Image (cartoon, rainbow, N blue to C red; front, side, top):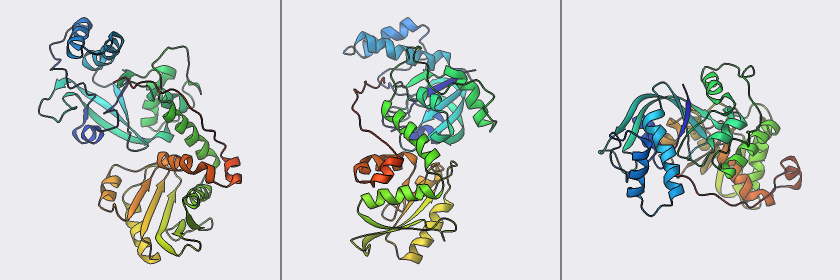
Amino acid sequence: MALWLVRAGKHGEREDLALTKNLLLPGWDELPDLSHINTRQELLELLGKTYPEEKPKTIRNWTSQIWPFLKEMQEGDLVALPLKSRSIIFIGKINGPYKYLPDLPEGARHTRSVKWLRELPRSAFDKDILYSLGAFMTVCRIQRNNAEERVRALLAEKPISAITQTDFPDQTEGETPVDLEQYARDQIRDYIARKFKGHDLARLVGAVLEAQGYKVQISPEGADGGVDIIAGYGPMGFDHPRLVVQVKSGDAPVDVKIIRELQGVMKNFGADHGLIVAWGGYRSSVPREASRLFFELRLWDADDLIKAILATYERLPDALQTELPLKRIWTLVPEEEE
């Protein structure tokens, strides 16, 4: 058995289809049906004819990704789909061979069937596994540091302390470059999870809103009556838009119940809008429910909060910057291998 990474579009454009149709959808739709391909050399030659303007290195790289998708993945293997749209990783089990489905939309014709088992927040995974899942590849096997065994233990909700692991990735394996921006966010997420637990996370959210121009009132620690933060524009906070904010600091994804609760709170406080900050992310049903309330409600998960922190960091109080020490750096971004 093995653990694989299979993405669903460079920007996550095929994620919804992959989840609703229970399919793996790596792309490469310019290629015809690959069912007749029997050797890597045949695949390499077909890629070269289909993409004559690509460099030989790129063609070899694509061959090393498509061939496992065609021939090496086995029924029962695990597969990870890190979402671009949310701070969630779906884990599934492959339950069918490669199939070419020409009736599906563009980008979704090379497929394998999968049974999705769990959706887990990125915070549920150790840093080294997140590092491996950040590879700039569409398809690759994840095996460093007993990754498959540890993910199976995570699915079974077994403690993984007894499973051999290392805190940091082995840099000697020569793997493809990783998404350093996502890896940095994962490190920041881990630090915030340790340093800003419970009520302190609401304090951090309040500081971000103040940096965005809101006048903020944070509920005291303890029972909050359904609202953690009240925020309004203007010097006194009397101006519109007026927000009520619910902050959920737990690791578990929240369900649609939180939306319905916040709608009632918005009416009670006369708020224009609501914001839910769920550190553990959201169940799949929540964004669909929230889309109907686009002009009333916003959802933030851990990634959204971190992006807001980075966008306002220079305007955060000095004391908070001391608690959360960050430094802006520049790095060359490698091309994504798709």
